[in-house]
Image 1: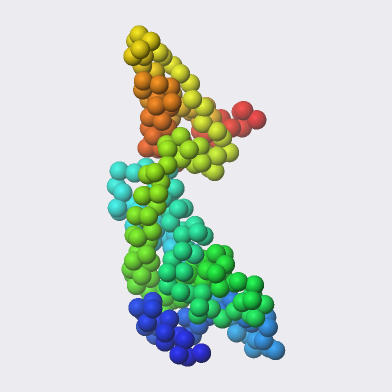
Image 2: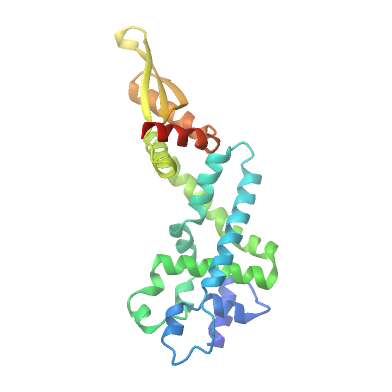
Length: 245
């Protein structure tokens, strides 16, 4: 399958000094399991482990430098969105990695070449292989080719979602808590009333918003919470959650 490695290097636009590392990155354990004897040949799981760490570091560094005004919480959310299985599998499909996988026959017949978990793991393994072959800077540059595109897609998609839904998803995912909205004031005549609403997560007030309806005020409050330092509030939120329990 030497020609396959040549083809995939052309697609990746990277020439490996040690092509065996790329072959290892493309080798799923099912392929080795079906060989009469694997002679100690490695699958890609160790490289996947390494690539995961490289992605975490380089993504965090990129986001830290690009979004200088974002607090820890929003940065953490962006990093998680960039390296989640769905995103990495999408990039793997873009690179046609599934076509070049060394898969066992059963896994192949079962649709393994398009399975998100396998594609995600393979992409992480390729990153790990590239790191070992050519160093952190080359691995970083390769990843950022696709990370920047994916980040733009995420921002467009997230921008179409309402702030209350986004805040609830983040709050439940991080702390298993549902945001609570409290109306703190109503001012003005009935035909032009103005509402002020606070949003609470656990025992912390993380945002306040004003609008001509409770719904619009809640959206403003939720957006304020999303832009606040949610990450640094986690300790207090955890304390609040335990008291509620």
